[in-house]
Image (cartoon, rainbow, N blue to C red; front, side, top):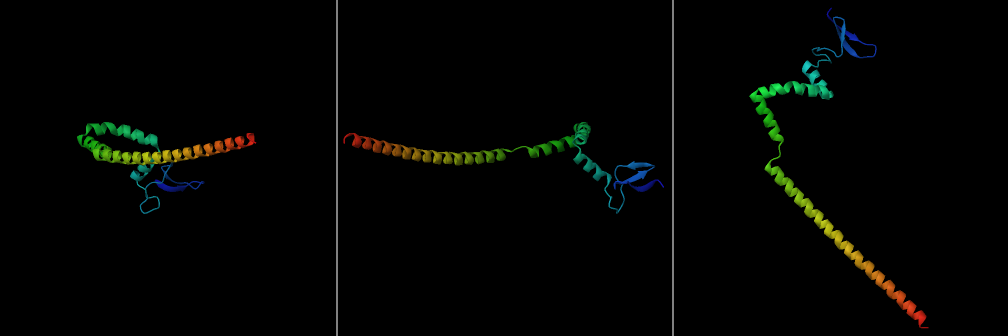
Length: 140
């Protein structure tokens, strides 16, 4: 029999094909391991960045040689580019944030001025009390 199911002692499922243990089960229709080659390829590319980059390096010459692929690539890139409306919306958001921050800064400045006036008044009262007490004790 060319293909026979094999279960390793560690509980890893595999398939022997002419005596060689495959690292993953081959396609089995209706079975729990019915993942196709494309699905396994996608999983492999998702998990390994180096293989993903290598595939991209292999596909780049094909993309540049085919006009339709170049147009599709440019359209995909163009969809990610910020438009004038996006920039205007960002500017208005920034202006609104700046105005809100300026209002908060103005509020903090007013609070500082109020506290400064309160401290100056407190110090003036303390000095006046001290001077009055000293005068009263020296004039007796």
